[in-house]
Length: 291
Image (cartoon, rainbow, N blue to C red; front, side, top):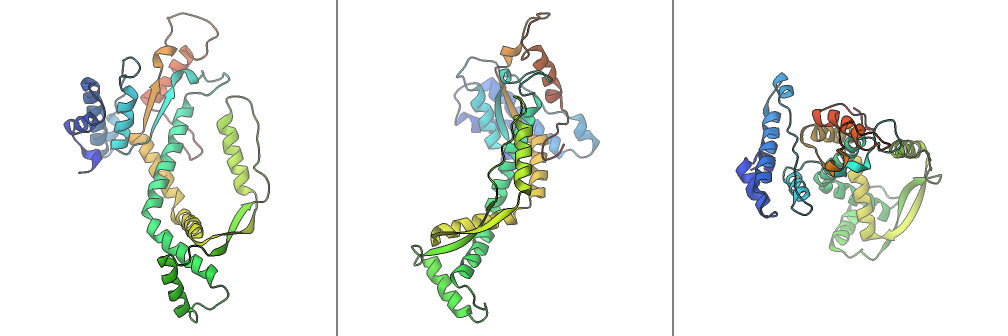
């Protein structure tokens, strides 16, 4: 059975293998996960009327709150991240605003989907990497004329007879050092995005690196896997995962709850509570991968 289609009792049974006690919390999370699955089965406008549940887990340190959330995310293969509410500040003040947690979750989701896709294309990538390696081991010859030699070399390669042999593989590196962009505190994400953009448009220089055949096989297979992965498809799938199954565990939420009417310079309390409401209720957040 697909892990995403587990019923609440089955989800609780899975969690019982890792967490002792906390039956009420397990049941609540199991029902919430099942409702998310049911929501995704609904078509059209009705889906928008069914909102995912937000849960508050209350208990002292060490009882398993975070572990329950982390295990449930692994169980349903959902992007997951844990954040501390006290690390964020009200929009307009120095520091990270609460929307940063959604951007971070999107990054996690992209990496997760890309890794899964690379596993799926691993066999094709190895085959293509092997062909490139044979081209390097038999340079300057017509493939038709060298067919027999190529097959002999392929057998030696797969048998491990060439593992200690060295080969020169082509690499493309930045012609300039990594660009450092400095900005004020709280602007780290924008700085990182600009740094990535500037590095991607900088011209690359071709050079060769001498490595053993076994290492060359891995390097070339990784390069081919990256080529085979459609990043537009990855981003689309990652976005869907974040929207429908993403889990953000906000720790130390009680630390930002202050008495009503209390003033002061603390910008990580009432303002953060107010900024968290759209995140909890559902909103659009701009990321480097789109809205």
